[in-house]
Image 1 (cartoon, helix red, strand yellow):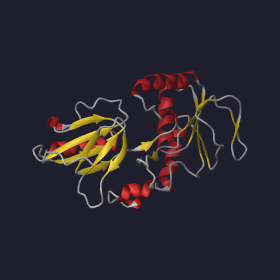
Image 2 (cartoon, one colour):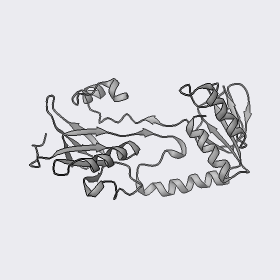
Image 3 (cartoon, helix red, strand yellow):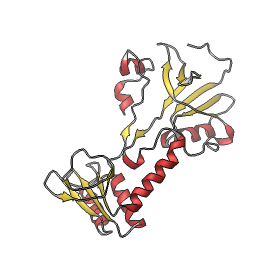
Length: 255
């Protein structure tokens, strides 16, 4: 553990540069007194500029990947270790690491690879004529609508293993109305059915659903949304012990 810095300000370290991290950083940098607080924002996957992230320059942006958290039991401060060996100290640590996406939303980690990834996905959508979206949640519904807006001549099908689109967080009346809405825009909807574990990408041949329906898409997109990015620097003690040092219960970490 590095010795406590000479700076007497309280340091808030925010890990993650997605919507959660940004929405924490901006109001904090606006409301906190820079003479008393130092806000550091750490992000390991950057594509949009963060030059205007902090209000009045009240904060520091660092791009890097956290590999370890050091905080001794009973300490009121700690540090994170980056993959390049650099350490960042904190008094308050915010883990805002977001979610992991699948399919065309699963952008590469390296910024230099993102543009070519997007161009490749665009070509796949542009060349295809029969697109199958696997998953009828918010991602699948929105993507279906966007495809029909841009390419109204393409055939778009959404398949959902549940009896209705979306999930039971929403009332049935709303879920039924959502299906009618996208069907009115020419999107085919299959509910209470599924296909096997199929990868996103260009498809050839016939896919058969669990109930025996034959589909012939030339592009399959897994659109079942994001999974929580349960980020944790692992060590021999495992996940529970790593966060026990931070005073975070496992249930609280999962939300």
